[in-house]
Length: 237
Image (cartoon, rainbow, N blue to C red; front, top):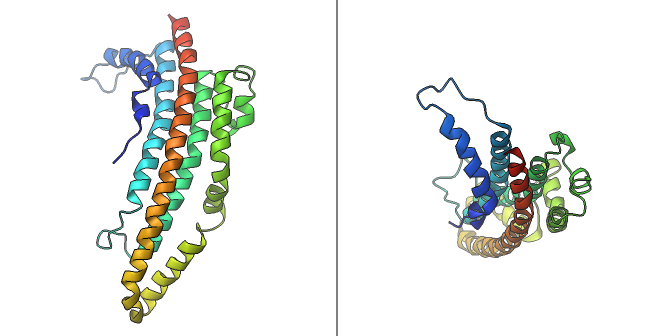
């Protein structure tokens, strides 16, 4: 199962190094007594957690692609057929894909110490902020927004309106519904298994292409914020 190479990015190494300084002060035998973190340590820990949220979401996208073909009737939730499983996987994929940009906005808020409340995270409040506007960070976020924006229709539909739908998938859904209601449809099982296999295979390829592109855009974004992190950490010394 593939995981993102971004786990080795310099931003995580830099933030982790400072965060370890705080961990080293903790007494493992006194869990109820924690030392106070310095402002430098607190900042590094916040950056580490915010970056981890971005990187873990990329991992989860790769996991969701692999799991799309992982349906096993014996292990599935009660009354979940393969159509239900595939729809669930696709919806999960789109929800996570679009959340990557939102998590990157949150990271920018932390990196630049803008102090914006979570409900105000959006491309206007972050990208056009006086501290961010015109920087490489703003450019990287703009490109990320352009890439993820076309997928927001699917995300908003499944989050607020209805089940994910497309013609080929809906036809498969009709078969699985009828097969549960009428044993006579059992003879068509292998035909629709092949159709479902083909649908999932094609969907996985397209999804993987999307995530590879997204991963590269996130990498460019993380590259753009490393120098900001390093400068602010140095200012605390």
